Length: 131
Image 1 (tube, rainbow, N blue to C red):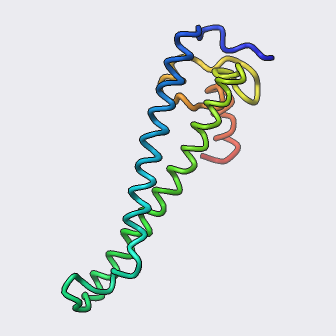
Image 2: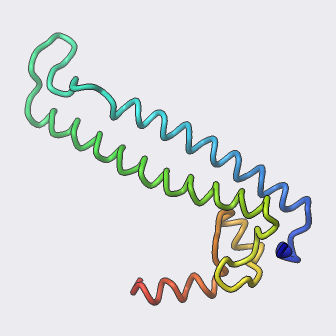
């Protein structure tokens, strides 16, 4: 089994695990609340009195729902990255670049605890994608 990043002792890894679990719980809560907002069931075309709303109001409601769905999609992607980081902790590979197996710097992990790649490899990916 591969070894963890040598700069990360068991206490630091446990701290990252707790941070990732907390982040995960917050994102799940956000996704649930966005699902409740976007799942209005056709109420966007009338207000509580039963009168038809102005088309601009309907358009705003639709935009808000689409925006919420877009945020939920980004949150789901982040949730997947967090889950993958938790699996890496369980497998003893947390803190290692999944491409190069080089250690990910503690500063990078502090900023992005679910980071998959060391900074060097991440920059290479972004250059290839033209970012």
